[in-house]
Length: 380
Image 1 (cartoon, rainbow, N blue to C red):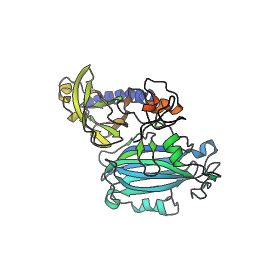
Image 2: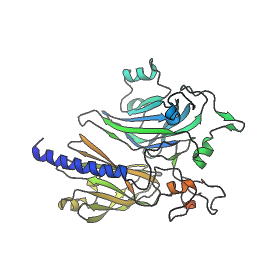
Image 3: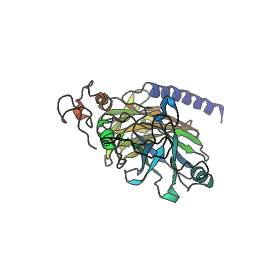
């Protein structure tokens, strides 16, 4: 690489690191890094040399460690297409502090991968490997994980459902969909791993959502701490500088499809704004800022960096990935929510923002829906 281009890459990377730190540490409007009953992996992608690796652990062990104090968790996993067509679902069993994984890849599992699942390590109860060519999963989609039940066993067997005189201690319908009070939690991570000529590994954020244990479907509402409410204004960073070969993908996950196209704004780096139109037809949407109407004016002014700003047409989530130098450098930037988030505010039954809690989501507070001081509404 010549000295000029190397210098440009360093500047781009330093700028990216500063902005990335800001987005991670000063995030406003939703929470990240919180273990929860339901987690959303809002995007996966596969290719001949590309896989999505999803890891998850039961936080039931806490400071006591594995196989101590708390019970096994039945985790329901659902793989969806980009338009929320259920592809397949299955249950896994995690003991306290145990770690499981899901690999979504192009080709069927290798002999070494099958050995890990079915050989002496016997990890099939807490891990799976699915492929496009072998299992028929789509090349892109999303995944949900939700805890269905807790058991008395503590060794990954999920034996002896925890009960009391009223039945199961953990009732998914009540604890997950209505009150979000279940204390059994998962921590999740996901990465895109490319091992071909453009090798890289980069994180996929995994927000907390309310996941229906019966069908794996996602909804917002109080307790969906990682999602952004409908109609909130959001912004996502982009970089289309051709010198270090900057390319941007802005990922937008939405709770429903058929949102069509909507007006957005390109805010380019020297206070130049131009309106544009973005397509958001699916639950999993990918936007290339370099193809949007108006971006050429920004580039002619040598304003290659900036933000895409728009109003969320549905409950959802967004983030950007910027690649440089033929994709060997790949950087993640969380999107920003510029509005109030009643999914967080109304979770304690007290409204601190402008909007009323009853307009914000599923019931969390006592009393009939719509009554003063209660939180009820969104049933998607």
